[in-house]
Amino acid sequence: MKSAFARTLTATVARRSITASFLPTSAAFRALSRSLSTSRVALASESTGKPTGDAPEPSGRYKRAVGMLSWQSAALFVATAIGLGIYFQHEKSEMQRRRLEQAQQQMYIGRPKIGGPFELIDHNGKTVTDADFKGRFKFIYFGFTHCPDICPEELDKLTEVYEGLLKDPEIGNVITPIFISCDPNRDTPEQVREYLVDFHPDLVGLTGTFEQVARAAKAYRVYFSRPPKVAPGEDYLVDHSIFIYLMAPDGSFMETFGRDKTAEESFEVSRRLILEHLAKTGGADLAPATKA
Amino acid sequence: EAPNREERRRCWKARDEFLACLEANKIDVFGITAESTAASEPTSGACGKLELAMRKACPAAWASYFITRQQIEKRLAE
Image (tube, rainbow over all chains, first blue to last red; front, side, top):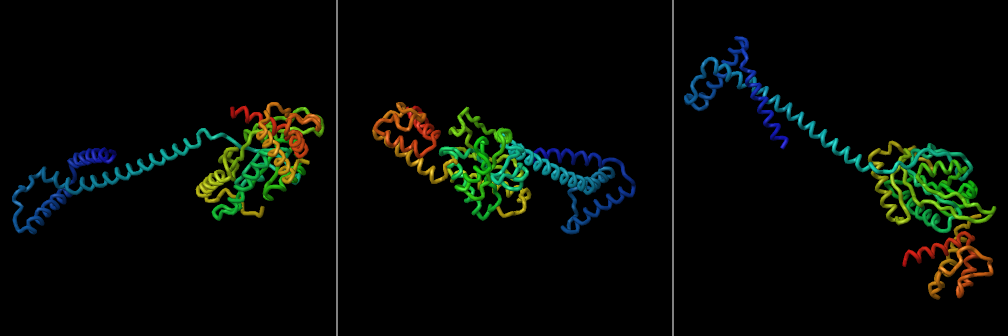
């Protein structure tokens, strides 16, 4: 449809340029155009051996107009056509680009704004912030060490997915798996370190004061209950939302995996998202490889 | 302080045996007191010994939790 429109427009412009060519020019110019048109007629009669008797010798003013029409406006016509062609090609690709951008934006509209800065204490007792984990993808799971069965199951799932991606030749050592305690009352760094011994050695354990943990949980939209009023030493459970978060190297949110996702599903989705991210960034946002 | 992997495994085994016993004997899980009573007073009738074994292998909060969860799942299945 556009090309038809373009042709119409081009024709209109061409007609206008022909009209413009009727403007008076210098005598020398006229003489030149006259000689060009007559030489064309002469050439035609030479090739056929017959005089081109059909068309009468163009008379004065008409001959001038035809002469100018034949090369000046023709050149202008072609130049305009090319110019318009380039312009419409550019506009077309611009529109395609804009449409693609909008489509991509649609994909991210409705994505939760999850993640953010945190300050916590790692399983070695060292204070760390989110900045210390930039440059690597992150799996983050909120749980607590006194968890009956859900946290161990989710951490086993996380370990399986992490190992699979670590061994994947296209991905490798670019992910940090992180466990964040939402039971700071009982989960000291020591406690967290002991707990994580049963899972993958690369797992980083984080805990902290109640305020630090609460702030981190809030950033990740994780709900967790305060411990009930229990006697010292009395056991209690922490109620908390159950998600594994996949975060990008710059700390932005990529995906969550709930209880319903198996290790295989989580692995497939993570692998696809990480490869997409690496293809898009070319690995530019990755920290230089360090031994875990 | 929290159970390690081996202790968890033993607790889960005791739990599964107890729950299987309830199923086999058609004992109404709603008749069981989830909260830990005195160790000598199991409330699950024919499965009393397995209930005690579970309460011994698992932290108190876990045993209550397993029974309560079983009750919830039964209610949801209805």
